[in-house]
Image (cartoon, rainbow, N blue to C red; front, top):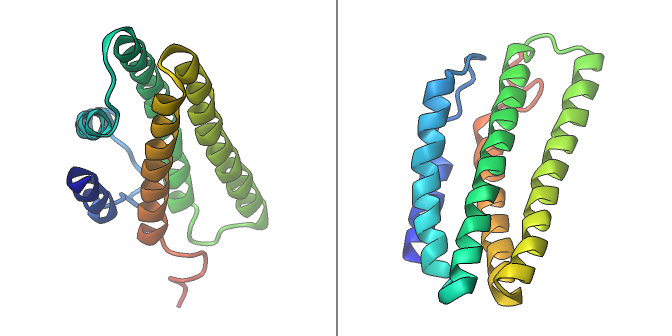
Amino acid sequence: MKTLFKLTFALLIFPISMSGQSNTEEVDYIQSIFGMEKKAIVADFISLDGAAKDAFWSLYDQYEVERKELGKRRLALLNDYAEHYDGMSDEKIDELAKSGSKQVKLDEDLRYQYFNKMKKEAGHTAAAQFYQIEGYFNAAIRMSILESIPFIGELDD
């Protein structure tokens, strides 16, 4: 659990780029580092043996591939917000709100989809633990992002 708090702290101080540009290689690198740290924490949190362990980690790896793609979409949404921050139109506000809502739903749907897969293959307890810790990670990431971006109108003179 100590490692979990370290990773959460790292997430909270991880700077979010507001430059409006993303470097795909940098994003992939950051995601791979985060993914390795995250996997180590999940391994400490969820203890399985035998076939259940193999099934869980196979599904977890599949989940991570899909989660990383959603992370890239989240970054694109943040970049869109940054690019249009100054003088944001009503239409852009509506578009960003709709896209943000859709992003949260996609994140939650993916987590629930893998919860269902994992409970069949690795058991209810492991699936519940996965669902719980991923919810924690998602909340920490969202909080970090929200603390790092200005509210609409906050930077206006």
